[in-house]
Amino acid sequence: MKVTVESKIDFTPAMRKIESDEFWKDAAHEWHRLYMDYVPRDTKHLRDHVHIRPKEIEHYEDYAAYIYFGVKMIDPATGAGGKTGDGGITWTSRKGVRKVPTNIPLKMKTPGTTRLWDKKAIQDKKDRILIRSMQGWIDRNL
Image 1: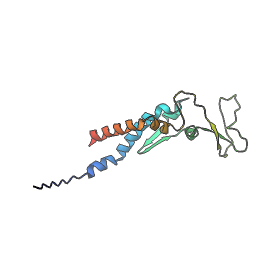
Image 2 (image 1 turned 90 degrees about the horizontal axis):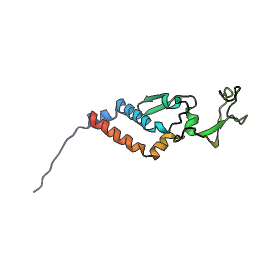
Image 3 (image 1 turned 90 degrees about the vertical axis):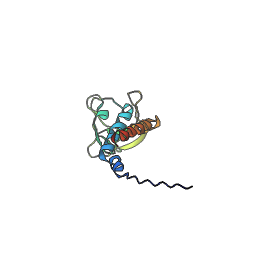
Image 4 (image 1 turned 45 degrees about the vertical axis):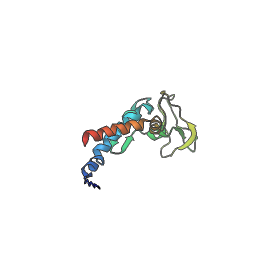
């Protein structure tokens, strides 16, 4: 005896929900929460000053890329990272000059923080927590 069963399931509504900006913005919020402990936090501005959009987390401090890539940047003409007139409290660079990276790693002051903080979070398997969290979102919202 042969039995054939045919099922027609319309996944379109579910796919729309998963592809929605709401889903991806929630995913970005969760990913930011999970990697935040790895972000250097000398002043907390880098951790806290973020724009979160669907599929995007932007740290909007002027020095964000400098810290993220974690290498000393110097003025190609002077070979210095910057100049100070007040004993190192504030630093400035020559206007209009694009700094170049060196091979000198930055020293992070806060233990446990690092450059390439999202990659470190993946190395520590935080991405698996994100996957479980977003599966929970799907279960709650579909």
